[in-house]
Image (cartoon, rainbow, N blue to C red; front, side, top):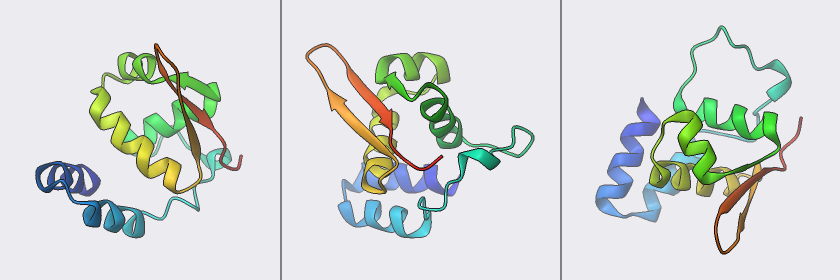
Length: 104
């Protein structure tokens, strides 16, 4: 919930400072997909990370349809995840692809 509020605030203020705070407060270096437990409470970004981890490469449009999350939200999450070294974003003429490069 906190990350969603920060996202809305960042969109409203269009501030890279808030993105920086999001990266600091939500340390993504410690993500261990081997210990991912389906019974624990998950958020949208958790489901997004799990989807990328399982598929290893997924199109942004496909992820948006599977998770029922708007593309601008996924783009923001991609930016944060890429800056933390978990994914790589590949742009083509027709699609944006997300590739898992994190550990695990």
